[in-house]
Image 1 (cartoon, rainbow, N blue to C red):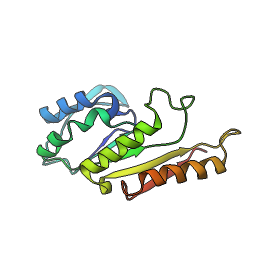
Image 2 (image 1 turned 90 degrees about the vertical axis):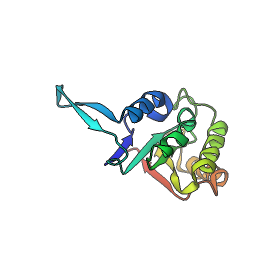
Image 3 (image 1 turned 30 degrees about the vertical axis):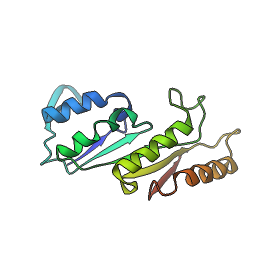
Image 4 (image 1 turned 120 degrees about the horizontal axis):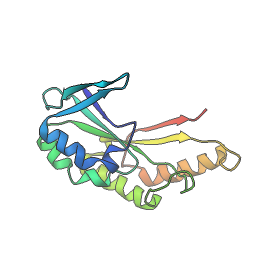
Amino acid sequence: MIISASRRTDIPAFYSQWLMGRLREGFVCVRNPMNFHQVSKVSLAPEVVDCIVFWTKNPQNIMASLKEITEMGYSYYFQFTLTPYDLSLERYLPPKSQLVEVFKTLADLIGPQRVIWRYDPILLTDEISPAYHVKKFEALGRQLAGYTERCVISFVD
């Protein structure tokens, strides 16, 4: 089983302590989105979890727990979203320069092959042109060189 933590909300940034509690307990209760009253208990035992995929814009809160997660026997990697947007589009994030340093620290900690850079989503507006993205992607790419082996992009349409 692959645990996607999480595309719906940023578990590493906002709920890392909750996740650590679930991993320590070895299970999570999941509500059926089609039947609110149906709740299933899902095992999170390392023997049944093939991999945890951490989706995040800021992994700082979970980084201190990675050694414990590894010692528990879990395999994992990160999908780290890092885009050039300012606070008008991405509120509540630390400055991009700080996130670049967090990215590098994470890659140094677990290896660049386990930190996938997501330049995603690519938004095009009257103020954000393709040329803007080319310039910003190149700048971020230079800063992240050697700290990741893969970049994923997508467009909002």
